[in-house]
Image (tube, rainbow, N blue to C red; front, side, top):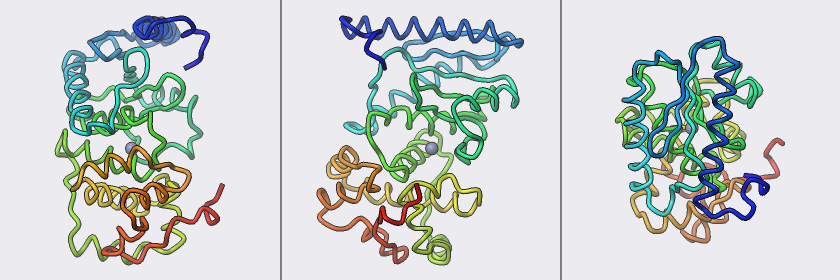
Length: 279
Ligand SMILES: [Zn+2]
């Protein structure tokens, strides 16, 4: 957040200043929409949704409880950092959703998994969702809200996505993790050295091909699942990991072995090699 707003303010005043800015901006947004939208707030969340959105109260309750779970379940990793309340925007139809996100993303860079919603980590971070019933949005909210609680870290995409999928499963039971013989066979047949570099770089999570994208998420989850078995070193690793080398340097520092060794039981994965990453 930029200095001019925060200069000379206490922490509480910074929160209040950004809260007021977000509310004002939402009222301008509502004025610019033909559909009637309303904002509402609870302790940690500011929600902007169609005026007739039936699940508004249930949504606030789910956001508040999920947020506390995400913060408490991954202590020392997730953080409430940032000023102002968390912003959640529910858009009435596909046209509004696409047009709104079009301001932040080129179509080609939209994550494949953002059919129902995405966390936009650009300026004042916001969760942007289609205004479906809460039952249809819960797993997306759990996943994207986890991303929102990880923005203070410089995570490689695989670690960010692995943690978000893990919390999505923990909160909603929506993506139980299995690594059986069939899944291992699929990974062995799929990953080539080139694709493995795309995984380390993070590009494979944006692949057009469903199998490439799906196996990337599954592999990320497998890595996180394995590492979570021993929390203190995992916490240290996550805090040191950097996207610029896929976390390889932090991994050696904490675990005293190369990161690719973690994947040896699944397939023969090459080490992250930045020289092969496309800009
Ligand atoms: Zn994600």
